[in-house]
Image 1 (tube, helix red, strand yellow):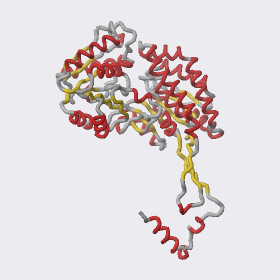
Image 2 (cartoon, one colour):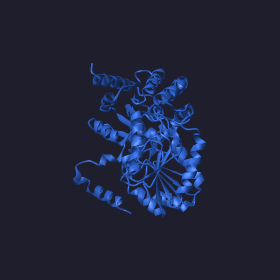
Image 3 (cartoon, one colour):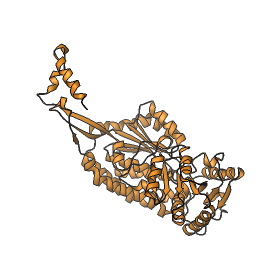
Length: 470
């Protein structure tokens, strides 16, 4: 049997079981509780697997940035599910009375989810939680760049769910390509824009609706009135989570002219406090692969060759086998440099000077719409001006990254940074059909809305006159 045929058979098994019995309220809450228990059971194995896949990732970072958000997401979904599932009555138009109308959310069927390597637990199981809450069955494809974690995720699903309700597919790029070509009822992908194009093309052959969580170059803007010390601490903390391998990490900084020296000094001090004695510090995550490390070093070399001033904020003598890249600032960057043309996904922070706030806004708007935007300023009027003048997937004001931890806010990109959203109710909606229902009475005025029309001219004129009133 070919791999394509095997994947199709696994999808068909999930779909047939869904058609026999779509999960109701109690089944969904039980499924989410089972997943939470399986995560607890395999917690140590998950943490160790991520550490091994990265060649060094602090256990505390995996607990804080992956396992804690998943448990909190499950808790929020279980508490909110009854309200999300409730049908909502709406008013009927006068000409359809005495009909009543309502809408309710209906599960789609089987959701396919392709996870990402940078947060291999969270970005695989996070969308799955939303899909389960919406009543779907799930089929997951974790990233092949984190194979140990993928193996533990498969075990988590096996312990939490019946094989007729959830499945986990592991393998390389060929398996991922075959997976994306399956006729899912919804396909969810987290990854690069380049691969996002391929995912969308594959899904189009089946008219499969897709959610694309991509990335891009998320800017941070510091207004000159804001505390530079506070801004630097928050920006560098967010930038160096997971060694910058975060889709919503600040990708470049727009800094008021004249503050470069102060920013450099504060950034150096911040890094020394966060990660003393680098490279001999186990709290600092390594780059996921030698290929990705080489790409980051090439970005630095290209920028330096084209005139950028490179400032390494920690010792950089780690060997190639260590897969470490030191926190690095790049001053004097230009659009010709590769580091300003692609998402960095590492601990490099280009710094761009600006003189007036509107200059910074124009700089952001001249580039593809980012997944996130960060603005540091306590003035409400200028905050509103930035919000009204820019477009991005999400915004955090006076901090970085944490908007994605808000269960009652959607998370997703816009344009090149993504399509669709999830988290909380918005994730429930993404994996649902908002189904409209109208119930007509035995005696209804719609009996008049039929031929012969020569007997209904007076009715049509009356309807048009009423409808055209202002």
